[in-house]
Image (cartoon, rainbow, N blue to C red):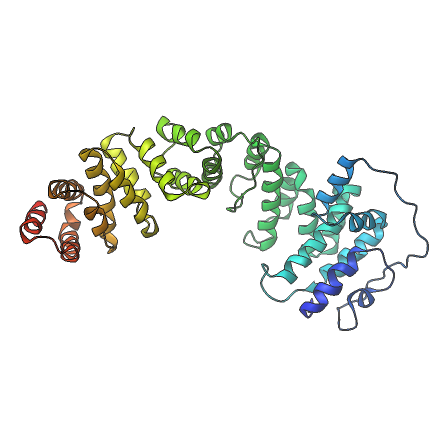
Length: 399
């Protein structure tokens, strides 16, 4: 049973103490407060091993990447440790139970320590290090070595298939392994990410990926079968090249009703102000057919936080037909009880307000009309309309 330790011990000893070349046992490495269930037999370092030959800049960069971004001096210490010492310190570090959420600093430091040691061991021994980790019976060690093997998705697939169903798919270890595979594959480009997805079609993580500058978004979006991956890529792509994504959305090659357009809109908003987002939205949706446009805009503007964008879009359009269509899309918010008055107030005259209400009403399912009428009448009450105009708007909502 793993023993819990204070945050101070975890930070000061459990990570730093295990990553550098030093003698002593587990308690010495962790500090006087630490207690573990066993005392690992760490071989004393009696002589300084010969320094490795000079490395190229590329070699140093690869070593630092493999270590998880540790400083050069720590990386050099890791490379000097004998493999047996790496294994002993992996076992000792894995024996620590870190208190608190996995997202808190102590836990992150603990994972970083495991990953740095595991990365160096896997670099030296390859699959043999995985065989050793499994033999310890500690899933944390096995998971750490699997993360270290993420450069080779096929090897990870082989081992995950071997371990399943012994590992619960909901375990955090699963998520971290797949996340590392996806991160490394993404850094290598679209084809590498597609290959990783093919190996793990049901297991790719639903977290943001870091796409390199030369990532082929168009090729990836066209080929991927991973819905979440497509949405993530479109969002990142739109933040870099909104015009290219607008062309994609207009092309008909993707289903703009399944969330892709929303991801694109979020991406554009990352790098642009509201006025630019409104302009972008108006330009590409203007090429859609009337029904499709109303449906797409209705979905895009459904979130209350986007109402301001929708209202700005209505106000900025140049033709009555376009203003009415977009306002009618905004009125779909009425079903959730959100105030839709701003959409009607953005229209310049009574005739366009009547047109928007009529167009919205025509698309309300028959079974929902009684409730929708009541809710829309509350909207009219909020607007302080002239009595005659309010009566005309109510008249538009007839069976």
